[in-house]
Image (cartoon, rainbow, N blue to C red; front, side, top):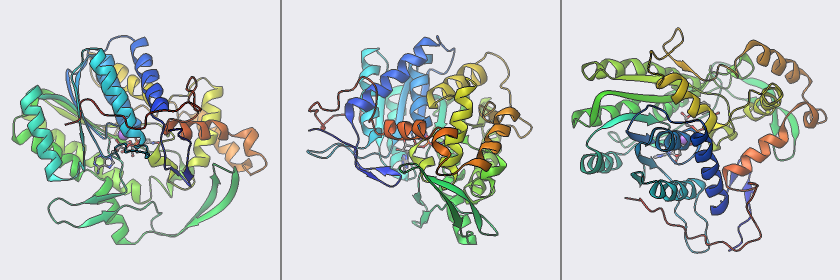
Length: 396
Ligand code: NAD
Ligand code: NA
């Protein structure tokens, strides 16, 4: 079929298999161009199909030659109905891994559930024995709690008082004022239940209980901080409470890994266009200004550049892992540079529907958004009839 984008707000209902494949190949080539990483040999990636998790899987496999198991929640392709981008990304990843002689298996299902944890543990036991690195990169709007059965829905709201600021509809370029009502206590608790550290700890507990973590095992989860501009809706909002919890959980997990000489880290990453971040009000305007400033300074990175740098220059340098005063790895260092933030703050004051095309990188935002779904990828012929029914070779 001929597949075109069907956009509904900040989601696209279709995905292009060839475009997704090209994105994955480009990421693999980038990692290879940066040379080998003396890193982990057996890696489990939770949230492995898109965004930072996919980049982590690609860096592990094609940078460190690691065997990878990826867990994700994606929609398979069906006759006349394209699968989700993460489905096609994984199909492409598995194909390239096979070609390179790398072990790669994938599990599609709810990582929050006991059932998917069981399937994953059994696969590790059967095929890899133990794991050296666990990447925790889930981003989800909901979680069915495996012990209580309660459905938790996360929200993106300020805490305490309403928050008003500028936002942009990145499709039309229309800049307007948005007011977000504050969260209730229940909203906060639900968001922490979905995006906090409880599930990360459950995974590590389950792996450790069955002796599936290798000596010196490392685990990394991803967080975000960002500037004061977005603080009310991000770091001091409901999602920020979840990130506080996630960051605190790193210490709890590190204590549990002491006997293995293992360690848990949180890596604070840069703001990027992903399916998760497009849904947050105010953030798309911030990102379009940030992209403009960082590109002009030659500092711009995508998910693959971020994660390749995390592995090569933070986690696997052969020396100590550099962390901030709160124990966090920082690869948002370039985003948070004083000169970058001062320029973004000045542009923010001026941002309007009229000025944004010139002062912001709205085009870069849009292109990245369409790229997430395999559209507007250079070198792909979108007039070509493609087979939407793509299989994931290593699907368990
Ligand atoms: P993403 O939406 O691209 O990826 C989410 C992944 O989680 C996908 O692989 C998806 O299939 C998987 N997933 C979702 N629900 C699942 C479930 N129930 N079971 C199994 N898999 C499930 O998101 P992302 O932006 O890469 O986010 C990953 C992490 O990075 C999050 O913790 C996010 O907060 C953090 N982060 C994001 C940014 C950003 O700007 N995007 C910046 C810093 C940190
Ligand atoms: Na991810």
